Structures are given as C-alpha cells and as structure tokens.
Length: 359
Image: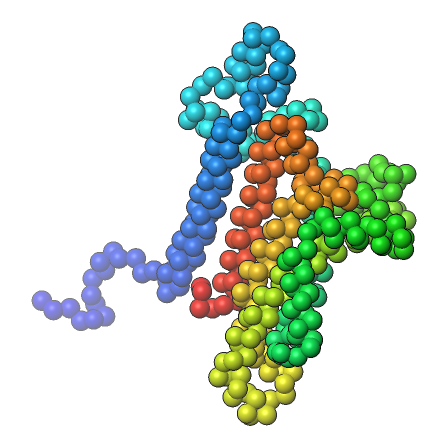
C-alpha cells in the first residue's frame, strides 16, 4: 500500500536545526583551541623539566649549601622528591605547577609564585608602553617609507631600522641615562620611582601608574612616568625598528599589486590608495608582527632591566641564574613561555576575525 507524502508514518528521526552544523563546528573549534593550548603548555612543562635536570646545577646543594653534611643532603633530596623516577618527578612537577606551586626561591626565601606576581607587572608596564611607542611610530614610518620608495625619507627610515637592529641594548640604555638623566635631567633615573616614594603606594594591580592613580597620589604618578619613559622608549625603539621594517616590506608588496594600479588609474586619491586599498590587506600579518614584538618585550629585556634597575622578570631571572636558583629560573621560564603561547593564540584569533578566508 502506498502512502501519500502528507500521510507518511513517523520514522522517529529527529530533525536537527539548520544551523546545528555551524554550532558543532564552533564547538569543535573551541575544543581544538583548548587542546592546542593544553598540548603546547604540556610541551613547555616538559622542556622546563628537562632543562632543570640537565643543567650542571644540583638543586639540593642550592638549598642546603655545599658544606652541608651528607645526612642533611640526603634528607633534603628525599623531601624534594628527587629520589623518585624521572616520570614520577615530572607528574609531580606538572601537578604542582597547575596548582600554582613553583617551589621556593633560594635567593629571596619566598615562594616563586609570589615573586613572579611581584615582578611581572613591572615588566608588563614597561613592555606595554614600549610596544605602544613602537606601533604608533613604526607603522606610519613603514607606510611612509614604502609610499616614497627610494626617496631621502625612505633611506633615513631604513637607516633608523638598521640602527635599531645593530646597536646593543645596553649601550643605548647607558647613553640615554647619560644624556637625558645625568646631563639634561629630563627624566627620572633608575628604578620605578624615587627612593623616597618607594613603598608609599599599595600594590593593588602591581602597575605603578594605575596604583598611584587609585591611591590619589598624582605626584607619585608623574614621578613614575618620568622613570618609565626612558626604558620604555629604549624598548620601543627596538620594537619600532622591527615593526617599521616589516610594515615597509608588506606595503611594498601591496603597492605593486594590480588592484592598486587600477585604483590609481581610476583617479582615487593617493591617500585613499595607500590607507584603504594597500594598508588594509597587511593588517593581518602586522598583527602577528606586533604580537611577536610584544611577546619579546614581555620576555623581559635583561640588559635594559639591569641598567635601569627595573624590578621586572628579566632582572629577577638574571639574579636567579647567578645564584643557581633553579626554582626561580624554571618558574620565570614557564611564565615567559606562557606569555608567548597566550599572545600567539590571541594573534591567531584576531587573524581569523579580520580575515574571513582563515575561518
């Protein structure tokens, strides 16, 4: 017996919404993102664990000292779990890190997590100002140089970029201190604030500029700016050189495309040709360039932080290395690696947002 289409019996099949496939793809994308971050971080943990085992530094001796009796040495080794197999040590290491326990620092006598919470905001503050300087100056300079290829201004910008690659960071920092602090007295000296302001502001966020404003201490705020502007400008100069060079390269490639020539033939103003037609396509690779540059600044410029007595993660890592403080070294390395992972993932998300072809 044949059934009419409108009298067909129900088969029990569930009709899915039309956009269910899109929802599944979104969930799959989120799951893939989380899995990618987890595997990358696990790899980072494995690398830092391996580094801690192959460096010629005995973590037990760093704690008890090289003159400790053998019994004290063995007791400390048992307490630190170094007598167990490597795989068991790694599992314990991963569990401790995921719970926020990086061990205790031999240099400061405090938990490494507390030290990193104290020093990282200083680097974050300086690196953020530095990347803002680098982007605000480097991108327009690169666009201007590409739009006037072969001109005197192009040559000058290229020389500035070459200078930024060639000059040592410590030399530029010392020259800046000698000229703008010691000679002209335009900026503050080493440290985050003058010594008589130190400790007057409660570290709510760890960022001196924000904490001083929250406390209503405008005098300390401007004093912090005077101390911050020189090291941030030095970092910003190196970031500027890289960003300007890459922007110029990207723009030269776009300005040679046929659609740009067509826009010019149609009489489109040169300003619109450069900023609307040629600049927009390079936003995606520029995000990656700026993200990597920012991650490099957040890594903590050891030389800059040392020269300016800046209490950031680079200075902390240097002191830890000199004192064979492996818990602090590995903790700082993990934070730096996590910063790179985070910024790369954010850059990837922005890449997909700005470029529909990558979705």
